[in-house]
Image 1 (cartoon, rainbow, N blue to C red):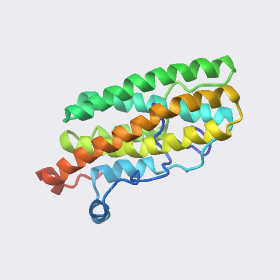
Image 2: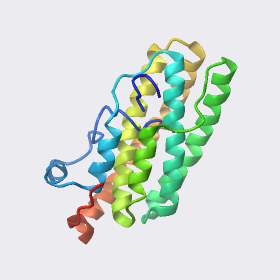
Image 3: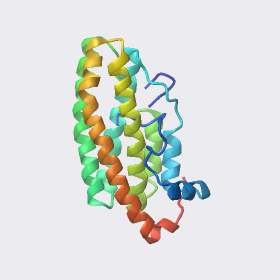
Length: 212
């Protein structure tokens, strides 16, 4: 599971993220990130580069949701191939399946209203993709899942805002219908991130900083 000041990823999301660490990271981890350039910090910095304004106009919402939805599918495909953890791979496959379905629904609904639908993701998602391509193994898993936590925090906020205050009744209904799936993704992302971050903290790779 972007326009408006170039908001993004993003689930549906990856751009201006409301909660940089999804309200999830421990204080120890936050201190570690502040003390050194890390893989997940580099990805996170890209995700936090946009604005936090949630679009309530239909054209902006469609562009935002389409950009980040496409980005989620592309990132999911990358993680399906490169992740070290089978649990991360399973999460990534779920992202590809659910967001592909949602993307198709959004495209059909928006097209019926003559609203333009982007066919590609945005620069923020592409930047995250390039950064993730530079790492592998446990470092990839940690960076990818941190991005998924923040992306879904933002996506949930975006879809909730439009479902409550959007200017198009049909798109509001679709946003409300899609919101529970994004909330499930958000919970799964935090649970999976907890596991891979815990593994990274206990493994030798935790001491190796990889800067983007």
